[in-house]
Image: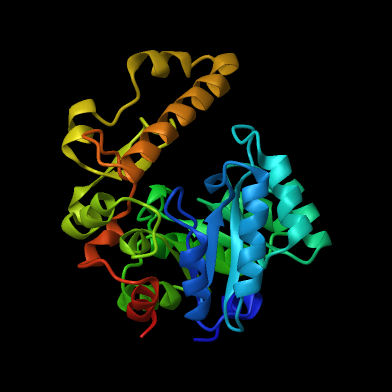
Length: 315
């Protein structure tokens, strides 16, 4: 299973446990490292910079050979904590950073000073070439099978286009729920995969039992795309509540988004409201169930430990 990704991150298997808002935590990443893959946590999962610092130190102590850990940074203006998060991560150290939703220039510059690798989320060749020119170490190719904020291209075409035109490793994100899916992405030319949704139903995941059970009970056909969480298309389980409120932006938001001066602020408000709603749904039982997940939950048949999920992916 040696690939450019295993070489880059010094891991045994070409798999990244994808960063998931509210779901990912240090317990999951510790088990991921033990199993020989890379684990990643959104920096936004920590309310304060001190909590982030404590998590980094905890993972550094737990790191084992063949495993790696990193953090995901939202690098656009919607993340007012970005500067402080980047500083703490670079001060404390980790194996890699995954950037999302913005220019990774600052992150690449600062991370490379202290030997941290930077992998960048992209959805097409245009942005892949941009991050490669900025010095990214690898590309996370987010396809139309990804959970959460997904891309628009199908996995095969996106991987083949990026590998043909970029010199750095391409990691496929989306559509991997079993070993056959992993093998398929590698056959297209990917150096590895980023896997998220299957880990929602892990014993270590920091979400409610109801959320985990939903990922077992629902399947690929139950995943819909909504604009009501962040203003950007996001995949969720089509619960009765989602069916009731609909998946399109309210008419007032659509109108305000047409104004260039107001668009940024409207998105920030929508993002804040959406995150509050998903936080409540993910951590407590409520009729307002907005559970983020991707179609790869089709392969989730029971709640398992993180290590058991990884075993199913790589063996």
